[in-house]
Every structure is written in C-alpha cells, then in structure tokens.
Image 1 (cartoon, rainbow over the protein chains, first blue to last red):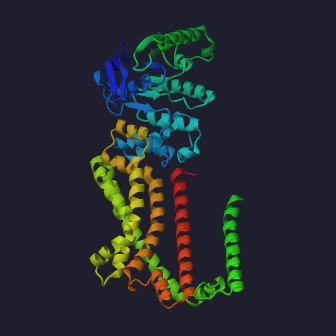
Image 2 (cartoon, rainbow over the protein chains, first blue to last red):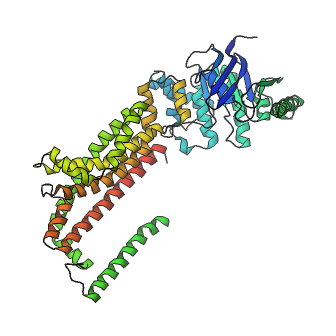
Image 3 (cartoon, chains in turn cyan, orange):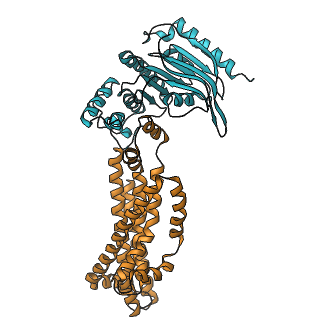
Length: 248
Length: 255
C-alpha cells in the first residue's frame, strides 16, 4: 500500500442528539479516489470534516500527512462569496495564506482556465449558471494544488448532463496533479464512475457496510458506463447499500 | 409597465383625494382655521417657502447628523459585540430597552444632560437614540448571517480574526447593514421632529417649531404647509436611500 495521506482509525463523533458517526475506519493513499456512499444522515459529511480538520472526533484517531493549505473542500453548494468576482473567490485561499495579490490573481486565472472557465474572471456568482458556479468552486479548491481534495456531494444540485461533464472534468484535473480525492455521494452510479474504491456506509451512526473496488483506469474511457465492469460494480455497491439499509 | 403603474397610481389617488377635500370644504363652507382647502395650503406653502425650506433643511441636518452618529456608535458596538457571544448576551437586552423606551419619556433627561441652552444637542441625541436600534440590529444580524460553509472554508484556510471580519463577515453583512440604515434614516427624521416638539424651544428652528408656531397663531394652513413639506422631505429621503440601496446591492451581487 502506498503512503497514506490521511487515516481515520476507529473514529466516533457524538453530538448532543446522539452519535453521528462510527466507529469508522478509512485509510486513504496518495493519489487515490475513494467514494463514500450512504443514506442521508449516515455521517458521510462528518467523516469528510474530520479529514479536513474542521471537526475533532469524540473518540478515535485522525492522521493527516497533508499540511494546512494542502487540503481543499468542495461543498454541495458552490459556497462562493456573492459579492466577490470569480477571480476573487478563486484567489481567496492563496490571499488568506499571505500570497502576494498579483501572483494569487495569476494562479486564480490559471485555475479558472483549468476548469474550462476562461474569460469569466470579472463575473460574480449571481451571473453564473449552477454548473459554472460549481466549476469556480472546484477552481478555488484546486488553486492551492492540494494533496487531498474532499468533495461533499458536489454535483447533487446539478442536472444529469452537467454532472456527467463535471465528473469527466474532475478526472481530467486529477490526472494533472493526482491529489487523493474523497468523494461523498448518494448516487451509486456516480460513485462507481468516479472512484477506484467505494465504501458503503450504514444508516447513522455510519459504519462501513462494505467496500467495492472498481477495476479500470482513470480517467474513464468513453462508454465506460455501458461496460460490464461498471454495471457489475454498480450492482455490487447497490447490494451492499440494500443490506446496509435493511432493518436490523 | 409595472413600474409606470407604481408611479401613476399613487399620484392619481392623491389627486382624487385632494379634489374631494377641496370640494367638500367649499360645499360645506368649512372655516379655514379648522380645515383649510388644499389650494389654501398650497398658497401658504408658496408664501412661506423660504422659511419652510430653511426649517426643513434644519430638521434634515439634525436627522442626518443623528443618523451618522447612530451609524458610527451602533455599527461599532455591533461589530465588537459580534466577536463575543457573552458580550452579545449582555448588550442585546440593553439595546432593546433603549428601543422600547419612548423618546418622549427620555427627552427631559436628555435635554438636561445636553444643556438647556443647547437645545440642538438634545434634539440630535434624541434622534440618535431612535436611529440606534435598527442599525445595531441590522449590522449584528448581518455579521452573524454568514453561510456556515463559508465560515468552514475560512477555518480550513487558516484565516485570522481580522481577515474573517474584513474579508467575510463585513461584506456578507452589507444587505442587512443597508436595510438597517434605511429604516434608521426614516426613524431619525421622525425622531428629529418629535425631539424638536419635546425640546419645547425655538433653538433648533426646524419644521416642528414651524408647526408649533403656526398652531399658537391659529395659522392652520401654514401648519399644514409645514406638514406637507415634512411629508415630501420624508418621501425624498426614503426614495434617495431606496435608490442608493438598489445601486449598491446591484454592484454587490453583480446584477
């Protein structure tokens, strides 16, 4: 196994209303794409916040090899500052880290070009479509060249065609710098397409109900969704999910 | 089409109401000291225009000074309070107490503190008290209404407290800040007029003083002329602030 970039070991998270997650284990290798699939409220997003260092576990250990600034998060909503231009939004992580404005702007424009959004630097979020706003959010996550990229249902609010385009683009971007990616989703087929490894979580408090490895190279070849490899993987994930959802 | 209708409809309604008023006064031969006709009020407005405009300017100046001072005080306090939950819990009830206490009840005390020979200071202080709460409440609500995921992003990128305030919370609060200031401006004008009344002195020479003066002389038409000027002033102030808010918000969100 290559060097882990992040690890959750027996983590549990308790909230005042009860346990939200765990015990849950996850080891993430450099450059690996892992999808977390599970019903609403199973603790997928909690696991992501633990990996990001935005939350601490009640019990268990979180290990991160990435330093501050080497982890990026993309949320379900684009989460852009409505008053700031696309370029300002993308440059934000660099400027908060103290990078000179000119250099931050240059990198922001490059990041926008990487997500296929050239010439919208001056546009504000309200002037962008849902798909474009999500691409700006992706550019902001990529501008720091993260080693760990956490995607929390980033395509959930988008139409099917935009979702598919963005999924392909995320793979294309991944090939450039190969960050480790954790991708949270409700969608079994999206998980089978995006990830090399899919972990199905039980109803809250979430535990691992099973893991499916998906063969085939990344980015996915054209027509991958019609191949037996994809269909079998999606069926295996669905079966694990059905078992996880069955009443105890 | 809708915007044309929203301009024409109130003008037509006002014209109809004035025509009914004029007709009823003539038909019933209502004495002028009791209810002057709109045409008599218009004549009184024209005859006293320089004096009324000077008084309107005095009232507006008091309201604007009070509004600016309230903005600085309430905005500053809200900003400090927003950084600490304990402070917010301590200050909010006091701010509400200030809001619910009638300005008329505060006036004698404020007049003593301001100095009886400086009525304008008392009037400004009272108008400021009235304008304080909407600004305080608007700024504090705005500073606290930031998208939690944006706050998490600032956590993730290790933003400091100053960066968080200036790059996230203050810009995010802008719509609430503007709303609070718009409400406060109208209240500052009301506060200025009420404070002039309760100050009970001609020192400030505003529109309220003109109204009282005309009342003492039973010049009802002049009194209503002062009222009409006050209404127009309030409308103009509201329209100016509404336009400013629209323009700023359009720039803020880019459309």
